[in-house]
Length: 353
Image (tube, one colour):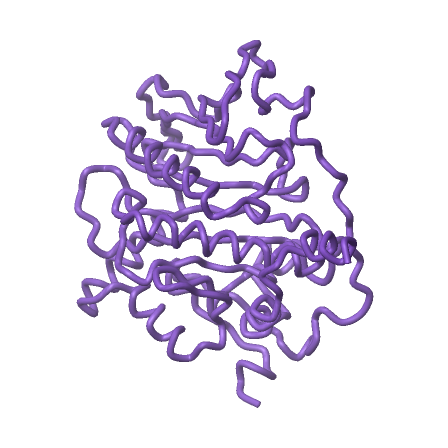
């Protein structure tokens, strides 16, 4: 057994420069034991009490149009306002605050209340990706906006208050912390090596194969070598692409395919609506050239051993650095072995037989 399989060690996150502690000796089969299944309540295609369903009234009194497919609107309770006054407050260089203008949008994936990405077809996911591209370009064209963050919180465990399939888009004047760290690391790598960090990293992962979950011709889903969350994954294009607006039509379809296949695996892992926070990191919209930036998505799911056992960042992880027991290699193998047929579809087929 190698160091990575048997002994406690630290792994460097090349995208952020931060470390994660890995303790594989604490458990060799992290999914052994009782695997509880949480059967999510059947949801209707339309819910008259849902403020995201077509035709329903939202909290601010506005009424949704009778939309089909994708629907986007300004968040009724936005965390950012575009007209925040330009102010900087500083006291002795220790207490510093500055205004942060921006916009917050909500994007519904479908008019159907009962759908999620793994239950949608590739053809249904493609318009969602096209909307992500269009929203990025439209918001990023504003001189006030320098970064567009698209993210989906799925499930109550991740703070989602509404199960209707949707995501949020926050467009900010300043680059958020995680984007700043990734931008600096990617730029430094390009300057030092003359090549793209994630292009080189993906080439190495494809050579080693141990952490690959699934792939198609244009996208790869893998568990990062430095993953923190038990079944964390990253989705990468095989071509050097900086943002949504650089994706060709075939790459949009390929991304839809990889998102569907990966999220089906998540749902099948513990036969539940698998919770996660997912987000895309793409080059800033500040008008500058960012040749080192490689477009990618992160999935951060909290489930550890079953549908009801979650991973919490506490103790040493809050005060020291993140720690994990399941190795990224073991997590990738578990996801890779999952079926690409959703467990609800399998159950329906068995019921008909």
